[in-house]
Length: 270
Image 1 (cartoon, helix red, strand yellow):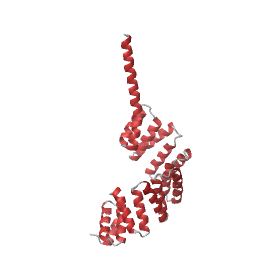
Image 2 (cartoon, one colour; image 1 turned 135 degrees about the horizontal axis):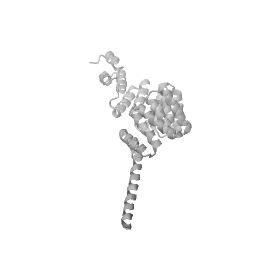
Image 3 (cartoon, rainbow, N blue to C red; image 1 turned 180 degrees about the vertical axis):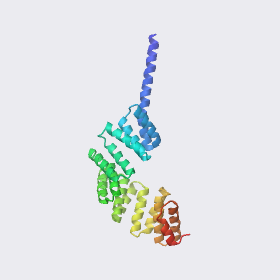
Image 4 (cartoon, rainbow, N blue to C red; image 1 turned 120 degrees about the vertical axis):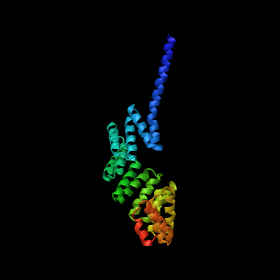
């Protein structure tokens, strides 16, 4: 009889350990899906994590962030607010609230949230970068450059910081300085945005052949970018390659870029 009780105890203990380990895996697996996999799966797993009380504040935060990326803005806000109630000292929550505001084009609200994130963590490079993006979107390009400078001092190995700083310099017509930033970004990691923006900087300097090369590299990464087809078409036009210009401008128009039509008419493209 004692032996049977001992066996039942071992079975119960193993089941308990298995269930605890299984439950703890919800948050871990959700995190993996959020950063490297499927956001919809991440939401399901974070929901399970919340239901069992596993890393509840973080689960609400990342579930809200995932919903933001999927344009589920109202649900995202509810989740992020729930996370904030559980842990108001977490700078990342304000970062994701800022990101949500960016998606909703509420740029001043985004900046306010990034301000709090940076106040809580003065070495939060990504928050400086995102605040710079928000500032660029309200045409505060000097402020954006200042924020990117801070982000780069904290972490000089992120290509996006140089790309975003280069964009702000481009808008201020600092074309050569912008190209230097895009060069650095592309050395760290080839990326569509830096190629496209460096191409625009080259074209504004009259270096259209270099611009065409960069636009081509950009389209290799993102083949259906209507704006890049438009600008490559403009550069082709500038060097007298009218057949290629018409081809690119036609693709741009088909993809929905409205400015292409006027240039097509100007060139009498059939």
